[in-house]
Length: 134
Image (cartoon, rainbow, N blue to C red; front, side, top):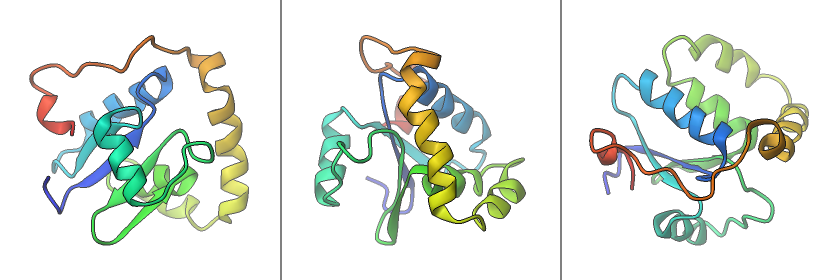
């Protein structure tokens, strides 16, 4: 695994999460991110290494190898800071208290299947995108 790439763990059966992954891939012009579904073997391994319980966090996690990991709204905004067009907005929103940001985040996360739907299985990347997935 490339130690300098940031890793995004996402809910592989969530339509909103899969849409977010596609959004990030289109805007990741410097090839900074790699992806793994929370449900995948790699995802479960990365969660276990960091003692992250998916009962508490079951949507998005950003891992910066050898630095830190971020969850919920902080993960989303840290990702946004690295994407053209979202850098300024993400940086400003990070100034809001995390507890406030996570209230909004938790409402969306709790309702994501109801609002956006759910897949029967994790998405399968195209051959062109396969190198971005762990």
